Length: 288
Ligand code: HQG
Image (cartoon, protein in one colour):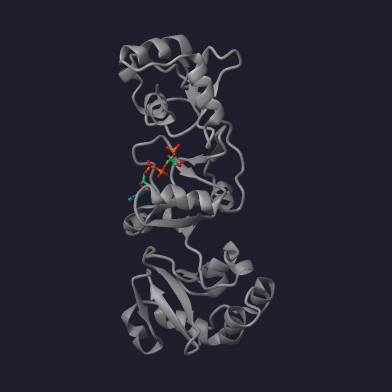
């Protein structure tokens, strides 16, 4: 008897252990697969395979129409062309990972590692479960539609798992758990304020609990307890107003905060989520 895990192993990573080869699209002939698995001393027949495919909770496998061929729908490390069409993803997708990887992901982005793609989900709970396979789970938000609009391709596997080649760190953020439910994910424009909007050289991120991001980025965090704003440069350490000489162009960030303090305060501690109003009232930093 075999299980889905063993079938995944053969169809994604190691067809040779069952003495089979995948065709260019990742399929293997069912009769050859059954023979090959039997040669390893395991018992399997077509009914077993059909049961595994039908009952797999993540829809990991598919047969072709007449059930003469079978393949894995995602997760491969061997070269296959799943013939997926590139399509526009939803605004946000989620990547589950382990806490211990966050620092490297923050500098390197999400890499496909040994697989053919980075795997993303449209469901944060699913991403959490994926991350838990590697350690203390963390869910990263990927601004997928923005990436797509910038020219990155996304594919939807037959199982509903989203695939892409690489996620640069500038498209990743973590949500602020302290925010109210309907404000969990700030609109992208709010999270990433570019120079043309702020007049500050470097990107300002306005959200909380994100992990280190590249230098030249400023993360602004509102401390509710004492109603102060903290600026994190590159996400590494907090800088308060008096220490602004530590970081080039920080004084402009601080100026920008001072100038937009009322509307920032309103956004963080008042109704919180009125982004439209924020953009209407927000001013780029004045040079003098
Ligand atoms: C991490 C399962 C350090 C990445 C799941 C992940 C999925 C980095 C790990 C599917 C990194 C790779 C795939 C960087 C990425 N530095 N670590 N720059 N970039 N990583 O198993 O996404 O249940 O290859 O965050 O459900 O965990 O088997 O990928 O933690 O859909 O059907 O490197 O496999 O499906 O791990 O999982 P994996 P994954 P099944």
